[in-house]
Amino acid sequence: MHNVLIRRFAPAMVLAFALTAACDNPVEPDDHPEAGGVVILNASTGAVLAQVVGANVDFATALTLTMGVPLEVEILFLDADDPTNLALAFHPHADEDESLRVAITNEAIVEYHDHNDHGDFEPVAVGQTTARIFLDHGGHADFRSGFLTINVQ
Image (cartoon, rainbow, N blue to C red; front, top):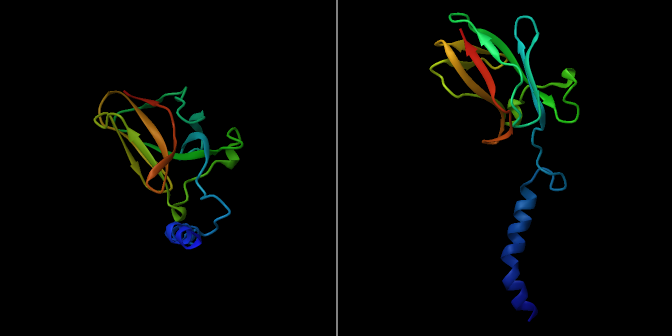
């Protein structure tokens, strides 16, 4: 009976040991970035252009762009424990497989160009669209903002 149990459960035990040994620290859960919101700053002046606290929450402030004038911005994620403290806002850590992604609903109106330390909202046509901001990690979104309205005039 004892040998039957060993033969039956040995492959599962070996697999569990191999998976546990593969982790850097099996006691600690895999670190994932935790954001409490997003802030969009004017890259030239540092002024807050739009800010939202919470995931899947729409921005209360819209961005207004002028045709022919790109808006250079810095997008930071707010600390999950203290999202009102802008001093704790952070960029994704590329060395930890984190990245910023901006998804524009209608790129015929606005495009977003990422330049690592900042980005540009490039007006393409007069109109209105929306964008969502993501903090990606390991091929999936760990944070997703609500919708940011963008007007081009």
